[in-house]
Length: 416
Image 1 (tube, rainbow, N blue to C red):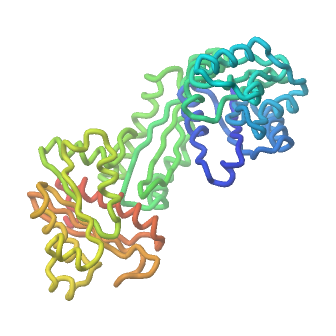
Image 2 (image 1 turned 45 degrees about the vertical axis):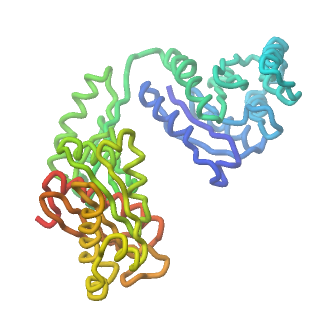
């Protein structure tokens, strides 16, 4: 079965909301072994919405629509479904009664606009919404199914998992096949170099397939296999993963699973070490990423953000002579920041970051980020040359700092 996704909402086109629903639905479709080749985003315009649905219905066996089934005037997915399927709108008195009862139980007077949620295309089945008042809709339109779900993720996901995916699997014939992906995560090489190193494997790929994904400074190699069951899929993926790992070597740091900050905290816990951070250019991003991991307090002790030269001297004890001789953006200053933080924080390990994030260059080209790591086993610093964009340099700089910390914790100091 081929399933397409149509996300409705002008706010998605304007970039005011990230289309996370499509990613969640795509993930669930893949886990269920359902084919998914295309996604569409369309604004709140009846003609364009109906056209998008008709086009998707020509290509797919089922079209999952998210958004536009609320009570306001711009919630017109129901009308678009009617136009695409060529059926009239009908009103469900029984559901209208349930809506009134629900509002009455809360002691509130229901706005009349909420009765729009009792409307649906003729022939559509209402899908229960356990977390909201807007029911989903399932309508057979020609050779395809139209399935509408709320745009609110907290409402959409339970309906997808409990009602929609089981229905689609049953409609697909329940052949039992699964689609399994395995993501090999790397750091330290550009995407083009990774693609070159694996070029022959990519060219020969059939089942499993291979794809390259760049994300926040990391390069991911995604392997995907279709098989009768998970065990058979693993039998296809294991030998290909082994070859990829052999070629990329220590640049591979994980397969799926936790983000780099969680991996680093796990390594610290294994060694019984604590960590602190000293930040300048990244302004606390490194600390935020580490403390975003549940249970981080077991290893993370705190941060000193010292942005100016004076703050580096006063808060971290960086010698004035180091700053004068080597400047703010230097390995020597980063090492002095790490040493100073180690003397002020109750931490076994310290990661320090300084640099020139921009928009104007500070002693070095914009995108120059310097990272130093100090552990009980030694200290080293490294200069990262990142894109000359302030936010990308800061984000990629924090990623690079975490990976250099990981390698230091593993004893793979980047200078050796």
